[in-house]
Length: 142
Image (tube, rainbow, N blue to C red; front, side, top):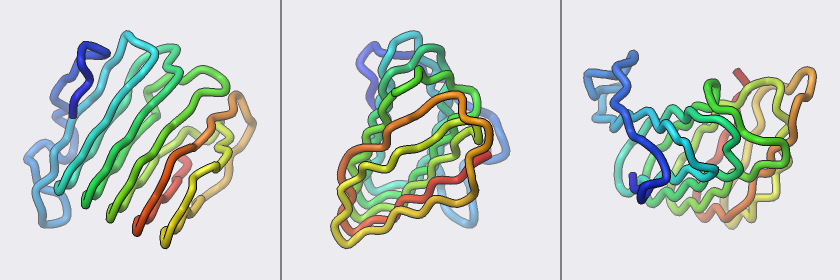
């Protein structure tokens, strides 16, 4: 993952701290940001990212031939923030707080976007934008 001075990266010793998840190696990292933008990249790997920070306006996720899980439970995105996804031959899972309403604007070519669960009392609207090619994107409310 590259964030070019836009945030601080800390190792997360959570349930996948041993580097294994469902039988394979997983790159796990907590992304703490003082900036308004967070960048997540994964190429030919399995990654788990825990996004943390306040007043985040944009999250960029780039995934090439990867499996990526991104957790937003401890992230404070501003209302009308954007999550940009650029996925090729990938599987991405976004774990979103139930209070966020996701507006799906993904351009999907031979890809699927699934929304699992329902939002509850809406506190903010988040826009999901970008492109998915030969990929699957799952939105799960937590």
